[in-house]
Length: 70
Image (cartoon, rainbow, N blue to C red; front, side, top):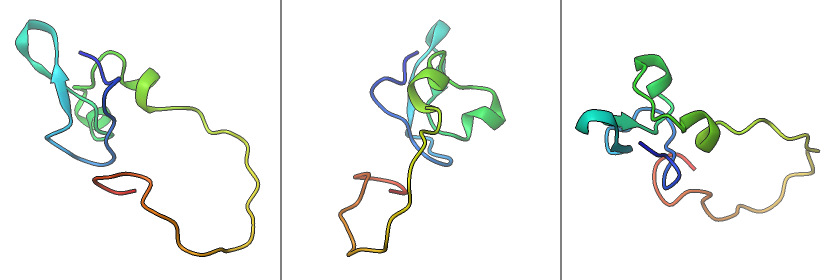
């Protein structure tokens, strides 16, 4: 299965792809606990942290994700 189309935070049973032998594999971060992640989960969903600088507080912005926790 492939997570290229979606990666979901937390536990989300709707966040899956067709896997091997017609079984579902998951693209939510909970799949690491249950061991049923899609083959490309780590490459598609678990990007390494990038160095950043924290700036002053500003006004609220739009959501970073259209569903789930943004």
